[in-house]
Length: 75
Image 1 (cartoon, rainbow, N blue to C red):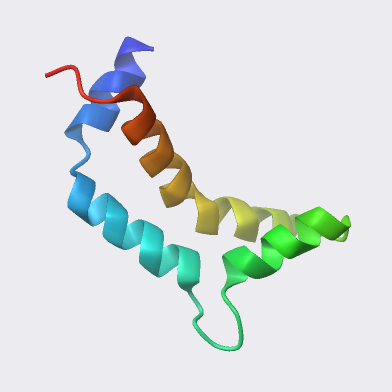
Image 2: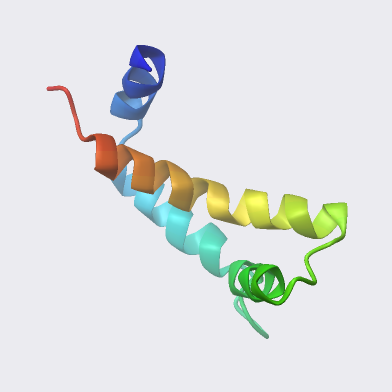
């Protein structure tokens, strides 16, 4: 866990927020991939490996941001 905390402390918050918003909302039209994949997950139609990878890729910055904000800074 100390290694993860050190890594998260080194990540600046502003770029992480920008990546979270941009990658979470991309593509902007017709609907964001993250929203589409979460709907598929909710309905049980998220079965293709490419869709699972897409969900992971588009949600990764948001997951990092949540973990960073939850653990806080040791400084």
